[in-house]
Image (tube, helix red, strand yellow):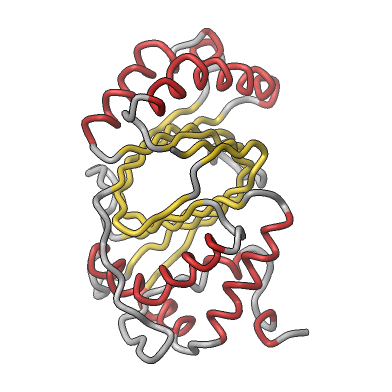
Length: 260
């Protein structure tokens, strides 16, 4: 067994170690410039199993009539749908997400969906649980194009009370992780990444969200291996994560994604 796999179990290996790197130093780190804000709106749903086939049909109609035109005219820079692959309790089964370079554009499309696209007979009749979230990122990148049946891997880390705030923590960790993710992007291991914080005031701001999209199932192991190599090159990451966070939540989803 290679060193990078030892002691790291399954899916946690990909994201649990994406911890705070305030003490990182050395050749593995580099100054990374922040990009203009990227806003992401996510609608989460918990549908009964009997409706899952109908969800796919509904998503296809919404994408064709509302989201694809918004991407073409520049209102959106990305959109997609997720289907949770590891279901548990009352967690979401499906999600729809939108990405835009301005909050105004994002909310314009969110309102359009609420007025029509997300008020279909399926959604109204199924008594589905539903909630929304808005994220903001200054560290992200993607490849233009569409991917159907891709895979997404994401995690949310909650910060301890004495940790830096989410903005500062993201800036500190970006010096290590952004170059790692950029190499994965260049190597076609991933087609999108982002390091986000939440901006919805009803949720705790003391958390960081990591999100990746991989083009196919085969890229999942490549992602894990590439991240393992980077982690092995800097022994401070894992203990730093444990000292700065109190809990993590991970999701593994099937994705249809389109980026401009």
